[in-house]
Length: 277
Image (cartoon, rainbow, N blue to C red):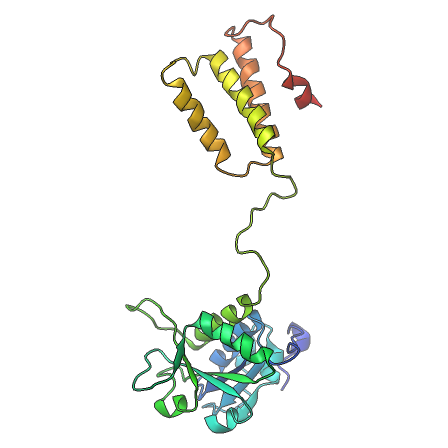
């Protein structure tokens, strides 16, 4: 069964070298296997193994739920038990909400992803076990794991469905090597204004406010000017934004002059020609 990749399935291929193997132990619903494949594709994972799926494999209902990750489902391997599913692996991680009575390495998802990157980077094969939907991995399943993975979530409601659990790990796996800066300022092509440009605007703004009488209270004037400066210095104002602000000040000044609050015979300010250019 191909699942109809020609009808919208993504052209997914495994990354070069080793990458984590997602092992679903005794999954119960085909849709959950499909949504797991979708989560894997989001995080750049490809290798899926199924241990004793309740309804056998393949299952047609898994493909619509995979939302185009058909190639992962097509390549999925089926095993009768956990030992056979991990026999060719060098390391085995197991997701476990409440590890008990075990002396074993414990990681959160982020640390586990970092470990997996390091393990796979050395050419070693690693698998991550996810348990059945109802109760998770059993003690016998966990006995094959050398590292346990726990997600610290809201203790009042830490329930995850199968695909969500896989998605968290897949996301952390992807982010462990993602080069996108965690914080960016999108300016849509306009450069950030220099401090000199900003200072010239502030000088003009203060001059116009003085002329309009807004800064008429001498004791309060320094604090009011500082507040204006802090407002504009707080962020990275772009050149386009400064041009817009200059235009706003120009129109306000014109309106004030037309109402007679500024001598009409006074010359236009020096920045007038720059705006018209």
